[in-house]
Length: 214
Image (cartoon, rainbow, N blue to C red; front, top):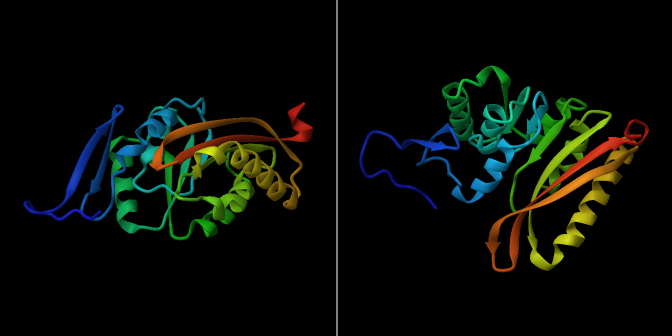
């Protein structure tokens, strides 16, 4: 849906959420209120000091929560939309976390390859499917492993099978890259109904080198 400005000089909006402020031009980018539970869940992650890549950063829905509340060490934020990037950088300065944020304009496939082997966590927050970035995201995790937060729209009755298939695919990508990993933990979060019988879900899956897991 598009927003038409009826009064005023611009469409700049500031939204307070969970103790921080998001700023954006409502005539140019969308603010998704439906992912509020997932935004707040990111704020509670035990991720202090982690090196994070947000592959679909947008205006910083998850990045801001991680920087302000989870106190991650640094976020590398990938985003192709210049209006979203402007909003993200504004919010980082407003919330005084800009020194721990690096913004990467352009194609996240390229950025993920440039950041190969560096991340403790990678956020893959794109719907209906983030699958095109699963393999480069695996490559961007540290050699010893790490955690992916994989967003997807899935039919309710297919969720369990999708989880198993997704973890299997990720392990195949890791093996292809010469990484001998295993899944050490996983968690499924049901964010919201996206359409009848279709859920927006997030699969948190953590990998560790088989040699270092013992």
